[in-house]
Length: 141
Image (tube, rainbow, N blue to C red; front, side, top):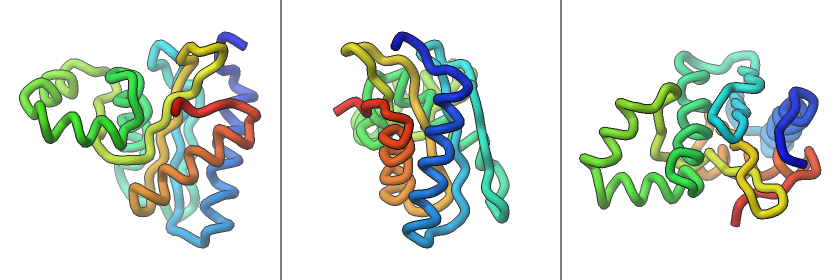
């Protein structure tokens, strides 16, 4: 597998939303981007609040931009705030420094990322990981 199709993106979203429902957390919004950071699919659950697209897409794109999960991006942003601010300004989808953005890998290569927002960052990340697994894909370690 070398790319994320719309069908796979929708499976990731469904898996993430199912995990959110199972955990009985706040409404989630999920964005899936390809390896180039292009949006493949997005869904905001009923009751999701304002700016959820920007946050979910920013978590996914930020993970891809830095080559690590958005949880690790948050650590990097603390250590290098000026550099992080420059990347955010240059990135078309932004970069959000909070857990919930996870890179998807196949054959050792990043093929895209998923970004989840709506609840705590830790819960967002759990939903992202569940979505990747539900689509039969692998999250970057």
